[in-house]
Length: 376
Image (cartoon, rainbow, N blue to C red; front, side):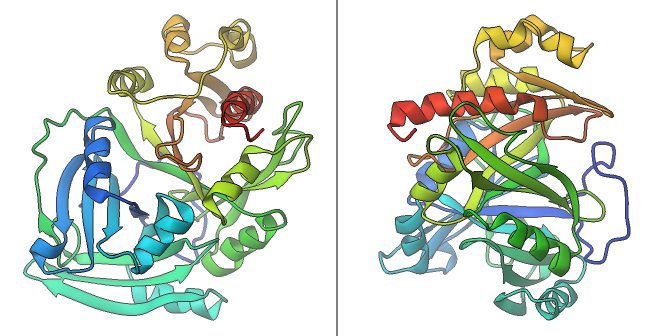
């Protein structure tokens, strides 16, 4: 499947010492893959495209592969309580295990990473079926998360060898999600610079932007964040750590419930956020709430936009601008029982930034949810 992203909304090309073509897939370990897959189909508009489990000869787990445009989500669950996947879910709840990266040479990328100090998750191996061959390897990143390096240049099957093609029985109505814009990691206090250095030293990423506790704070809580990006800009990883505040920050709450560093949210791009969010709301997706007062002076701050402000206000979509243009964004509430992983929906009209002007409003929205949960 072609997964190259358009260059228009990405960082300018620079020399890439660790070539990555894009996000191959994101795999979540979950408690019930079948029911989670239905949620992704019915609420988020993903189509079921491949499956692996006892019916395909795999006895210890099941995996449902879901796809919308260039986004592939894999939902995997264990079939026994002592399986490492079941232990992962017991520890973290439903959460992201794998941020898989699409590369031209998985073996070379793996050995380069390990030589530069990465910890191996598994060495290169190839697997094949009637549809061709895939080579994969993996390295550890923050928490229990891994990066699987995937070379699928010799494969034309539905996902990976061993998976069988499936088609959704549920009538799928895509909501307009296009590709993964960025994935955000939450790490422990003092961990941010360590992992920024990891991405710089091991994978040749560059520091794109830094936010300190003056940029991202409210009366009660704060955090610090740095964004790293690979050479072609197709992979962007903001990394957050807690900063000192009067009360427990959203990062601390995440770390408490996830019980380690991990992926906080997945930002997915759309070309029409008004249509996408309208469809998602109609499908039952809950979003963070920002008060109507946010919209009273927002155009004074961001200037002219093409979209109708009243429509954005009705859907609670946020607006920000940088020197390259503007962006529209909105954040779901957590998509599982624990207040951990959520989605961001983003539409870029030239902007390459991450909505700095919305941080305060976003934080206050999250704090309202924290207060309801009794963790603020």
